[in-house]
Image (cartoon, rainbow, N blue to C red):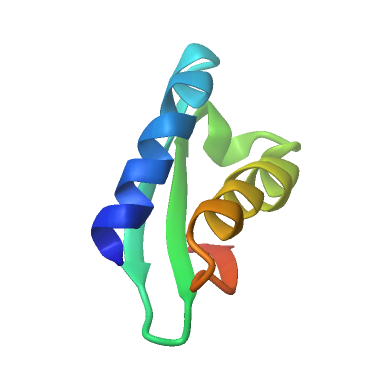
Length: 73
């Protein structure tokens, strides 16, 4: 499942890189929790939680039904 998650994150990355940020995959747990780290401009952005939940998590859940939640570490 880790490879699938990376493929979906690769679709999101260009948008994040365009504003000086990025997302790194930290871990995919057996219970469907995906751990990511927002880096660059995304790390300190006040909108990062919305990006995480409404952008990254929403797309991952849509494309990979096994994903239950995305958390930032």
